[in-house]
Image (tube, protein in one colour):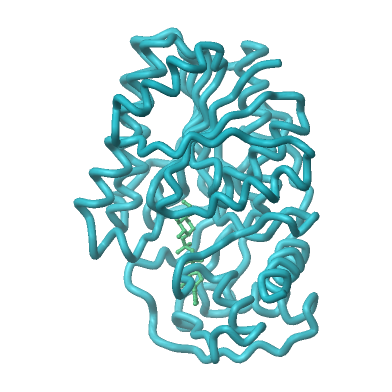
Length: 338
Ligand code: WQD
């Protein structure tokens, strides 16, 4: 049974990916210092799969502590690296904290992957690397533009680091560019746990609907889109997480055509903010209390994925539509209130 190390395993996408890896016959360990996550997420993983996950509460910025995990687990076949700070707005206010954390943790994990000759490495990247694209949908070959935030810059730099790294090691590397991950596992045992006032659209919707927030604001409806609000490619977290398992299997079967490949993980369908709100109101039966407010600085106007590469090469199938994303997000919010 191949052992996979998931960094950030207590996080939103990390915990969902551990469920998928277990369901596909992998053994899994996690490294997560819980600075931005709740260790309780792994209890949810155990409820779903019946399997306990060993989490090493280690700061990946501490090389010696990170190295010790590899010394104790010489049979690590693959690493899936999620652990990073990811709040776009916070990264604008605290750029050095973002560069230090996201880059040092990546460099330390890669040093260990190289020293222990780990066969496979999957990197959590982001559609933010495209910046504001001139043409949509974007493919993996769409030129990246200057990142709109230090967070996006750390993902661009991460991909640059991997380009050089993959040239000098045996490790086979994949970068997965997520679009907008939303929703919760169908069991409603795990989901998104935003810290503080949610910046992202879907938790803002569900927290407003359940009364944790008095109202929410649509950040602008005067953009050049079909209804004036920004357009995104929302993708269910379970579809995102299964793509990680498929990426490991793709590398195990040596189907990759180069030692570093990039995949877009989006549905290929654009949805506007107002359309997302309509979908939520339809599936929840809740009339959402929102107001159109000013634009949010740094917002991409419109982006969605061309996902042909992931669909064709990884055999990836999208199983959840926007209504399902909204319904599972809503059920999770209701569970948090219990
Ligand atoms: C989506 C749209 C907002 C809140 C995210 C992650 C980023 C990356 C890509 C992984 C925008 C609007 C939001 C609200 C609103 N993911 N909005 N009212 O900015 O696309 O970036 O996905 O790497 O890490 O942050 O997502 O959910 O913040 O915003 O109108 O209360 O919803 O203006 O148009 P974004 P988001």
